Length: 202
Image 1 (cartoon, helix red, strand yellow):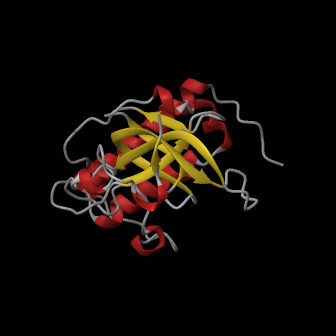
Image 2 (cartoon, rainbow, N blue to C red):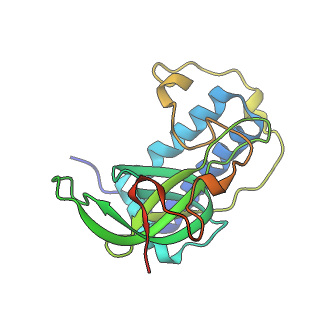
Image 3 (cartoon, one colour):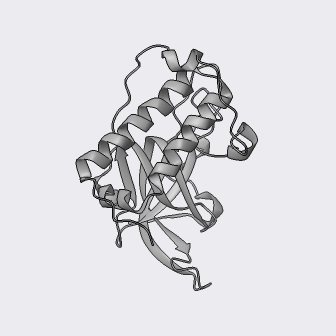
């Protein structure tokens, strides 16, 4: 049986903020392995049930916010992403909300999320769709501060089985760092037919 989490919402937010800052430090100044490890630490903390208390509805999020988004990809499959919100569009999408193969059209918000990265690495933005109604699905993270290269990045790494870059490939925490991409290829532009069956709503 899981022990009750006695931390306050403020304490949970502080811990998540610390791990997010550490992840950004690694993405900006660390190696690929350090960035992947720091991102994995943040992901594990975000999966704790108590963190759900900090999530907000998609309508409260703005461009430029640092977030963890839970929703669906462009093919209607469950997906999540962490990074900076570059664009938000109100759309409709055909998704299976409950995993029973019962696909239906729902309205919501399509987020374009860019991982926190360093300028000389390559990264791609991710598209995550979040329904308009239902449980909160977006966690706003504290805006990270560029503190320069941190001392812990120069300390010897202690190898941990199963936590190398290969085991966290594809996680959106800067492990695939880089320069901004052309967003016109990610989110449908006015008058353009959305890709992957995404349809612009009202």
